[in-house]
Image 1 (cartoon, rainbow, N blue to C red):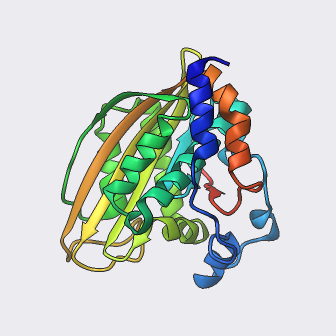
Image 2 (spheres, rainbow, N blue to C red):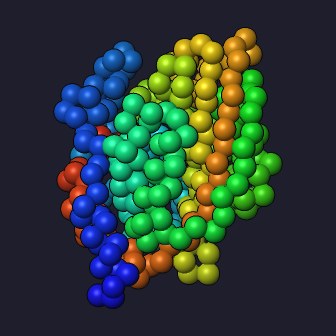
Length: 266
């Protein structure tokens, strides 16, 4: 194992993740609080996080903490597992580091620092914008006009966003990670394979409002003031590094995935 890989392994092993608290971070508790009930199959404990992103050969989507990740059909099963593992690991590191500021730009700064330590390298970061009328419509319009994404990536992100906001059960799960009173944040993500290499493209949105918002997907903000900060991130996967870190990351995560990740039907 080369020195660079050894230092990344050391980072993973020493990282502190936000814990998943029994009775708090469970889908059953989320749904009960929202007056909803899922089928037993929906509450099954799937150990392979990649399964939540659908089967190879089909576009898929899931929420992982505060990120709505969309994957193109060309991702293999192992690709999907690596994407899901990486996103949950970085999300929980960021949540631990940001603490009470987990619905602010600090969370996304910590998220980016972590994702770049586990086999992903940065291509570019840019962008800030403000002002919105409806949160999810704003995000959809922003993605549609963003040159960061290919047309295929835009299509699957928008499809996933529209599907998520129409599914009360899925939205209730996502809301717990994204709504913090007058502050909220969430990311949208596209994963694909370019020239044989995994690629992740993010848009992270942070909302700061002058009134409490309980759902940052469907809430209309026409009558409140809302400032929106956007941060784009484009990262490419180093498969050799990801292969070397996979077992270490999975050991760091909890055995089951169902308390932090939820599939989205598209």
